[in-house]
Image 1 (spheres, rainbow, N blue to C red):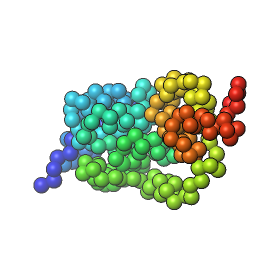
Image 2: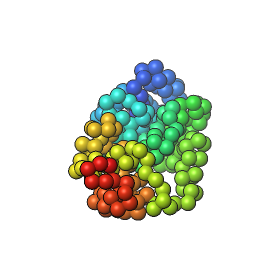
Image 3: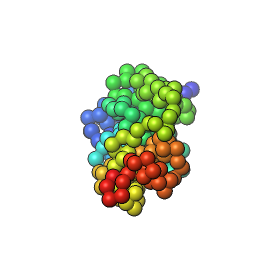
Image 4: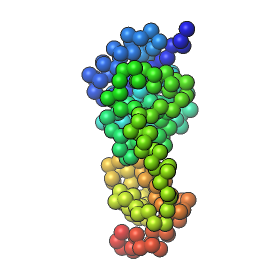
Length: 216
């Protein structure tokens, strides 16, 4: 007999939650233990309901999915997070995976694929949609040349604020992004500049003319 998978559905659209609840409630192998409309509600419910898998949207008002994934991982929760979203850009995929998501699927996935993915996530297996897998493999196979790879505009903005003494939280507030996203941008900056911390990144940026005193 297949083990019952306890599922928490997180999406800010009620129609999407209704559809997913109906899909999994109709399958005897799943129990939908709760629903949440944003990341903060998801964290609260996960702490009390102890789901096996959290089906997580990314872009939600209030606390976004990436922030919630990171906090859930740091809380020590054994729940596996399977991202289910409409976005497959690097800016969405990489932060979610780095934050601790077990898998990443797009909302146009067939029902059978989604059911298999949730079961696989419950077993701790990584599940990626083909387009997402292609992006990650492309990045892994690309030759890394940290000294020559340019910083993106957003990475420069984050580094500029860091150079001016802003904390991750302050930089996130100034740029209207999450702290998790700021941390991800900084990790990319470190890799591109070949450094390991904030101070070294700022020093390297000044040395290479990416930042200038009194300017950027």
